[in-house]
Length: 362
Image (cartoon, rainbow, N blue to C red):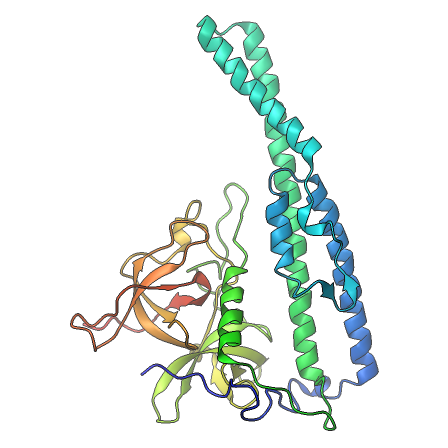
């Protein structure tokens, strides 16, 4: 039976915060130091948004795509008291776009003239060489701008995550304040879906191979997940059975080689201390099926996948790998209630599909 989501109805159970979270050095974090850390993080994020704003101005057809990506980082019209520039999500550079498009049109027209005249004269060769050189330079320049912008977006996301973890460690609510309402199931499912949708797509340079934790590529042997990272964790259930759950890393002890993780479904209520072999880091990049198909799980490969509308991973077979960057996997979950032992195909995002080291059931 799929694990039910517990404790997510508003007002039910304890609040999701635990005292003494984190390492000894962070447990004593004082409010002034914490406030200064937040101000520093906010200032850096504001600087990055300004830099990103300038980069987007230089882009051509990808301007709106970048702006929409940035918009997903900001939960509302205000960012901790700072107003997001009204022009931010609709920036485009018509002049740059027109210049690039004019050059491409010239290339097409030159080829049409050559076909009409049925000859390749030295004039056309020289002209095409110049046009293609310019087009190549324009494409490389835009590519560099886009890479810089993606780096800025990644840094902003990292700072937002560090800010969230710092707030969790410090404890934003004191004993005199009422406990926070626990999160509703629908809100949790929406957050998990957003996390999958905003997982960055790996875009390497020509010849680059996808790195570890891109799509199906596992983490390196010495990799240690950071606090705040989401992982698949193998824990013992109340009935004694073991199951793979979605969890968040709290800390890692190099002395014992063990993780402390919080159950994402019952944050602050159930903490687990687990060895490395019971932890599988989730992908940090989506693999592009069009450029890096080898970084994806293939048809009939055995995996662990997050069952829809739950926070548990179950064994499944890949039914269909993603065909486009925005596509999900189609998987068949092992299920004895069906005659062939597998469920009908269900969609699961790349974010929540990891390798299964257990043997396939016969």
